Length: 449
Image (cartoon, rainbow, N blue to C red; front, side, top):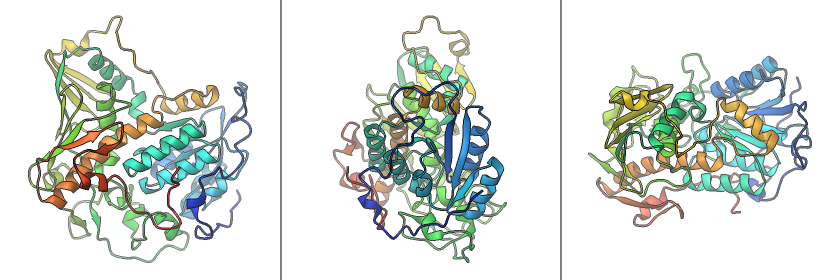
């Protein structure tokens, strides 16, 4: 295992990186299909809980070799690299510079996804990007454009899309088993908190400035990065600067099912609004909820936030209202079908029990999310959760957060924000458009093209 001397991220402006950074990888990016015996050489960018899990899982495929990992925390990079026999880096761009690496798995916090995905596409690498696909709507669109421009194969880490029961449930809904839909009930996901964690000494192995990246650095606290066994998942995803709360952590699973079952993988809702008391930004401190870890997954905190509604083309209303995490209930003229992780049920029961015969709608079938990506790398086809699909599911999550944030600045709920899914703009809310993106510090700006 080798240890690279990290470059300073501030030596050159990343904003100038609109052109490809390096020559594309040689083995799998050459014209034509690779031979059946070629091994796909992978690298991991971000090797915390999900990243290390991906490294272990991908290393189990016979046609894969893990060559390198990168993490702002060299403790994590070294540990994971040793376990899979790879090289360890602190600066992910050194992975992108390597000609032998064909594809990367991006499992960093959400605020890093856009820049790393764009850089990987420019570098000729195929990409597996963990959900939530993006940190803002504008980021997501630029990520899609980069993937398409550079001819990359991207899989979004919404693994439920390859689940057998989730596929079965979406097929039932799409083929009209519940009849014409009138209403969908999704989970009441929480929106992010503001960071009030106290400052602690930064571990010497962690480059905290790099970890913060596009975000103006916050005081370091071990809860943010999950540096102890006490916090397996970092509180970054509950913190507005780095993530979108439970809405963008678990929301991409359940709301991806909504998008798929409604046939909206390339579009989305027409309007979004909130009902109840206006949103109030909570500041998380250790004494705020002393008996709760700062990762939000607790049903007794649901009352803190106004309820979100969306309306899709055809008049179907989606209500964020019940404990249906990682799924939704689809209500139609013949009854209801509930689809969630590894689960399909219905009322009446026969709606889900009777198999479909000669369905009019056929959905993309994947039985293994990681294998699907690897196969698509080989034949240069689109995977089951391609960039556009991942972007659209993430956009639904962002719209829900935005509706709450608009209610906070206006002090009112009930305003229906009209959403143009093709232009990806609100037609009646400047505040809504304001929240479609967020500032980034130099030199981490995104390219305009």
